[in-house]
Amino acid sequence: MKDYYYYCMEKMKLLRLTLCIVLTALLPGGCDMGDGYSLDNAWYSVATVNPLEDGAYSLTLDNGTTLWPAATDVPWYSPEHKRRAIAVYTLLSDSFQGYDHAVKIFDIRNVLTKAVAEDLGEKNDGEYGVDPVNILNMWIGDGYLNVEFSFKNGGTGVVHYINLVKMEHADTPYYFEFRHHAYGDNALHAQKGIVAFDLSDIRGGEEIELTVRINTFEGELTKKITFRPPSEAIGPETGTETYDLNIK
Image (tube, rainbow, N blue to C red):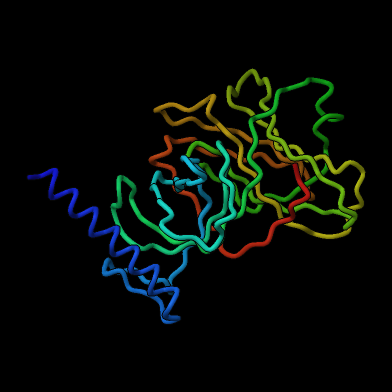
């Protein structure tokens, strides 16, 4: 009887979602799902994309919360494995088919997502660059180091190179350098960028202190940030920021 009850409840939730999506298309006033959520409310989050079959995907937020897109305004979005993205969405329902929430996606944009780069010793400056940035925000989320930063470009379309380099350091086992290579582009226009670095090589159940050295416009800066298991990491909502896409 318990399994049958669960099956009926899931079917009812699916019917409610379907009805809400249909009503949303017909009625501009939105739809209240009965769980205290409304399509008038929107959240902005950096999340990890989890590709599923037939082009479907789920999202994992920085604190481990899972989202299942029951509806979307961007059906052409193509999910990629180990990709971070900025999602704009509204909550439709709680606890749906194993996910924490069913959602409707208003917009989703990929975030530059990279592995940690190798220390090349004396070749680091030439390969990874020494051009300055300013750090706007840095946090751990779902096993990634996420960095919002500002830099300057010449408006010429030159693609800038961004990396997190794992350095050998006698006294600090988790010592990194945030690197920016402008390839000689003129520093004329202020831009914002966002990047996520996969920390899967150091994922574990314990807290680890990361040290990150950055060359800023004001000089050298060292930041310390605590790595925690994904279920304990809580990152910020990003708001409606616009980022320069000419970074790699």
